[in-house]
Image (cartoon, rainbow over all chains, first blue to last red; front, side, top):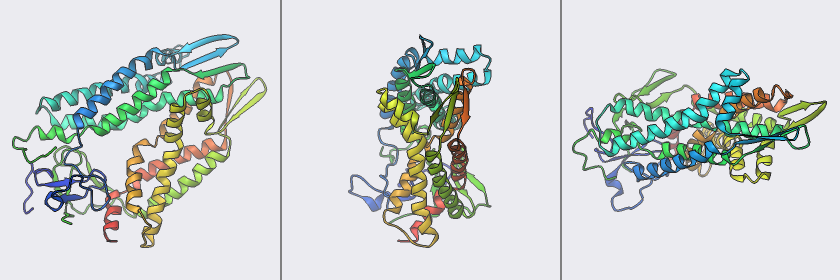
Length: 218
Length: 203
């Protein structure tokens, strides 16, 4: 390691970049061992996240499937003066629009509908581009990944709203709010997409740009 | 162990960079993909430790006092922070209940506790067993601490219920609000690279 050029990556130099603590560990010192662990923090070392594409696809497809019942099934069932009303995520947004709370309607719409769909589309697009070894705008694709990773958590909003609603509006009073099945699927979508963003390895975007990358093991 | 301290690889595109000393409160970004490489925050250990201890105290307050109360037709219904979790688990939604309990309370608690466990002895130049493992756990848990999303969820619920009842904020709500800011401050002050390098000195 005497000279570092612009396209010199850790993997091509035979260095593991620890996912957890960022320590660079030379491969030669670990020869012959199946699972190499970081000498500093103990995390398992890989050149790239293991089976990144397969795992991310599995999680993305599962999230797509769960997204359908998450939107079709009710997330809350409200009983008010003997009449029962089931609300899905979208009907919750419409409720806020009708009552004039446009800001809140927009927040829920973005967090519960736009973000999950955008996230699943972005991850699918990134996976396809990596599989086709595309060299199209790697910087923008990396930025897209970074945004996907950061905004995903905000989709949990609806799960928390339902939690607070069921806690506040309980049996024995004028009105009761009970959680609907939809929220289970919705929570699953949020968790699956968050894990999917974590299993995707953005370095694969850049690996496609390098012609001679036989040195990269996995 | 063949380690290279003067170099750092980008976590998003794997490009190698030479580590340069940064001015205070600045960030180094990757020259190829623009992702964050490392930060330099002065007194990262003291500041993070102060925030972590504050956060733990706030978590205790948030769990001892009433969180939100709902007043409807003269009767008052009091809730605490974990009421929602309990109700959800009674409605056979244990999975969602556990998810909410973890992301809004247990994970922030473990995260702050882990930081105190590692940083307090570090300040005195000591090291408790399994510090590296515990600090790694804290870093893994960071994205799963969602107190700020929970706070937005409370706001949305209150707007939704405002027309049918009066919502009275409790002491715990203010403690929780403060906790959100404290956790955000931890994210700003915490410079993992400096802390890992301090741990290197122990070997």
